Length: 64
Image (cartoon, rainbow, N blue to C red; front, side, top):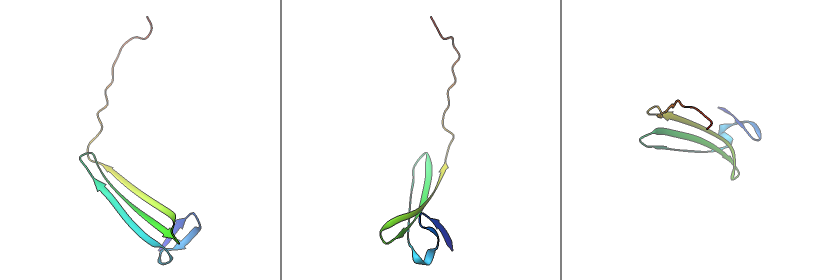
């Protein structure tokens, strides 16, 4: 697979792949990193919200 990196497009077989993520009450996140000779050259992330954030609207007047 070809990965777009800071060094240009590269075959993923040339890169070290690391994955991670977390899951909590609000979101699920995951990421994939590709490294070349100890240097991070690509990171992709995905975040899925589990519930909509609360948004409050107020009506009023400005001024004094």
